Length: 181
Image 1 (cartoon, helix red, strand yellow):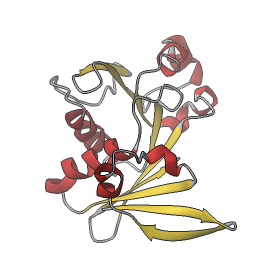
Image 2: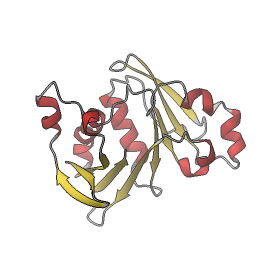
Image 3: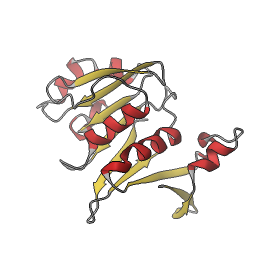
C-alpha cells in the first residue's frame, strides 16, 4: 500500500492515494504531484514484496536522470538487499541480483529501462576515499538508476538530489519503506 504524505502549511497531512489514480488517467503523472514530501510503502510479507516493488517503480520516475540516485538506509537485516532485488525484478533484470558487498558495485541490464542499473553496497569500505576511487561520480552522474546500500558511509559523495529511502522493520515483521522526494 502506498501512502503519500503532503506538505500542507508546514504540517504533514497524511492522505492515502492509490497508484491507480495516476495510472488510470494518462494525462496525470506522478511528477505533477511533486508537492508531496514523502511516500510510504508497506511490505506486508515477503510474498508481497514484488507488488510493493512494482508500486515503488510506478511512483518513482527511474528515467529521471536528475533523480536517479536512491540511498537505502536501514539497520542490518531490515531488507535493503531483498527490496533492491525486487526492484530489479520489476525492472526486468534477468541477472542474479545479489549484494555487491565485496565488489562494491554490480551492474545489471534493465529490459524495462533498456539500460544499466547500478547496485552499490558500501558496508565494507573503511574510508570514503575508497568509494571515490572506484569512480562513484561517474556512476552517480551517469543518468542511470543507482541503488545504494549503506549510503551513510559515503554521504559526502552523494549528489544533493539523491533520493533517501528508509527501510524499517516494524514490530509485527512488516517493513515500512519511506521515500523522501
